[in-house]
Each structure stands twice: as structure tokens, then as C-alpha cells.
Length: 215
Image (tube, rainbow, N blue to C red):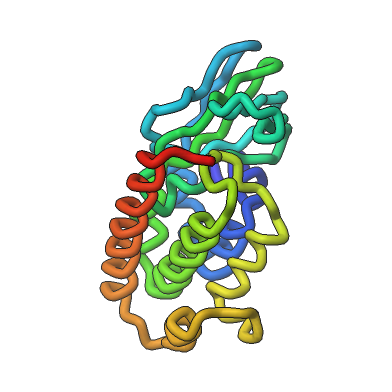
């Protein structure tokens, strides 16, 4: 399963880094957290308002993401090796658009709950993902267009990976973020509780933001 799925999954920068930090866990991710689904043309994978539980990777075919705002600039065409729905891995997330097949498609699904169990099972990856989750959610809430399921700017995501792994010490960070990055003595339990606490706080904030509407 690793040979089948991971060449597509590692297109996401955080998963490529995960494979370096904890290569032996990739098999567990592919076995426990990954499923497949096939779609026929015009079939929908998700719709607005549905609570998300998976991140999706296009293994074959063409998908179209239609934002619920009906603004064309928020729509995206997704092709092989692209992905949608990363926020679900780091917080509770409700879809903001419709993802439908424009051709026959093969989709690789990464279950959020199952993935987190594997990712937080070892100390090196737990510390990395706790920091990456913080940075990703902070990046999301500061974005002018946060209410979308499509987060694929590889330059931005690779920068978050570098900062989370301590490879980019000169990147602009707040004092609290820099302190967390420098604290290499985090225990596995601290990392896990940090992720849970951060996700809980940001989920409440995003919920209030969503209730207030988007501009």
C-alpha cells in the first residue's frame, strides 16, 4: 500500500517531511488512514456545510472545486497529484464548496483522525506536527480568503514545514512561536496536548468567524 499511495501523498510538503522524520510510520499511515474511492463524471465528493473528516488527493482524472460564494476566482480545477482539504487534519472543518468530478476520477482519501493517531505516536513527528499545526492554523486565520478547502500554495506550505522543523530559524516569527520552535525538549505528551488545545481554541475562533459571515 505504501508503494501504491505514498508517491501521491508526498506531494503535500508536510507528508514529505513526515517521511523523513519517521519513515517507518508511512506504512502505518497508508494501512490505517488511507482509503480509495472512484467517481464518475459529475459525481460530487463533498458539498458546502458538510463536516469534513478526510483530506483528498487526486490520483487520476480532473476535479473541479466550486466555492459556495459563486465567485469564479475562488474556484479551482484540480488534476493528478493535487489535493484539497488539508485544514481537516489540524482542526474541525466544514466544507466551503463543492468538489465534483469533471472526468472519471480515482481519489486517495487520508482520514484525519486515523492520521493524527499515527503522526502523534512518535516524539520526533509529534513535535513537528504540533508546531506545523500551529503555524498552518495561524496562516489560515490571517488569510483574507481563509474560507476555502483548497490550500495548495506549495511555497507557503514548504515555508511552514521549514519553520515547524526548525530549518528556517531566520523566518519572521512572533516571540511565542520562536520560543516554541527553540524548545526541543517537548515531550510526546506535551506535543499531543498542545495540538488538542490549539485546535480547540482555533476551532472556536473559526466558528465565530464563520457565523459572522465572510466579506
